[in-house]
Length: 431
Image 1 (tube, rainbow, N blue to C red):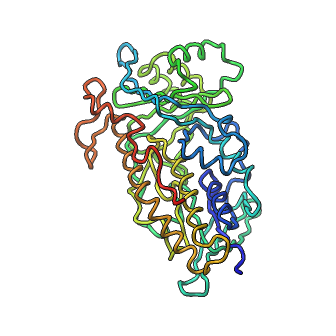
Image 2 (cartoon, rainbow, N blue to C red):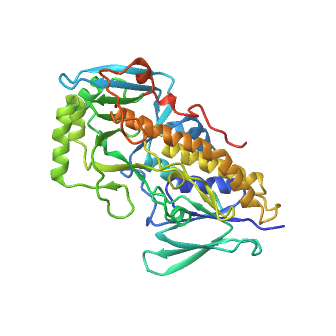
Image 3 (cartoon, rainbow, N blue to C red):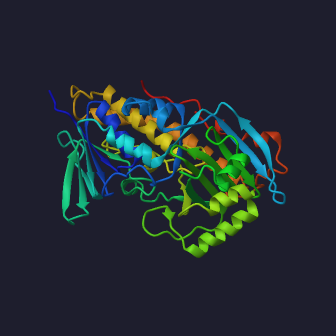
């Protein structure tokens, strides 16, 4: 009998912890390598996200208790046009069968971490440096990851049978296999913020925002103005999450992060522009949000593969499919990547009875076959949806007529719906 196999997961964000749950469920052990010194406290870190029904069902397998209690419904997907002069809103599309749930990134990450089963080890404060593979045909193969302990500066090695790359859209592991792949700048950035209204429900800002957006707590709002759009929805624990997408040149980023803090002067300019573009209620909410930040929006062309090194390396999450956020797909794709990977590992001998050399290779071939067509279609659709809502040209070179809510046809307007996303009702899970 062969002992339990070990998956080394690089990246301890939601995608990485989801993979740790999934491989443990398949009978493997997992070691997660994460550069953050400790898990987030679950309040004040990250921003909002939307979970679809398939993700909620998957998370319920890993997180005990009712996850519904830690989320709010997003039953309605509502797109509205904002008049540039009067700031009045006009409904473009309304879908009452949206069926997502709103969560805070920090809350979800904390719950995934607290629910990790026995057999999962998280190495906090360990920065990935490199990895090496045993040559194909050398015994049962394997992978050795080298990481730097940030507190001491020493390097350590972590050995396993499978490497799971959950290291984000700028993945260093992906770059090893696809050095020519470049992230594609979308043509716009997003201002983001979370407004905490704890103890402020009766303040003028909240009274007015609930009057202007009466379905907060049940609705995902999209406000479209000329060549720009904003998103607004409520999160649990007295928070409102907003995003505002602005077309412009690609900014210069420092390091590997795609988010950036900006100067107070830049924030002030943004607030003034919000007053010019949006209704007074939304502009005031944006203006009173503490520490808004900029998210530079990228995606990438669909990858030629999700399995590498003879079935010893699996790409998951944003490492596998960098995407724009317009279909609320990033977290949902990551969770389903993990679920499918775990199912495939279980099908090919998660209990240790299969030949060691065959298990990852066969499992990862099945994982790639199941996930690659789905994520490719969703990434490209999210790209199109973002360009549509930003009023950008829809041609392959960014040319052509952009969407304008003032002149758009019914067919063009119908494309704004989230339900137009491929596999909106669910993707294959290999179960």
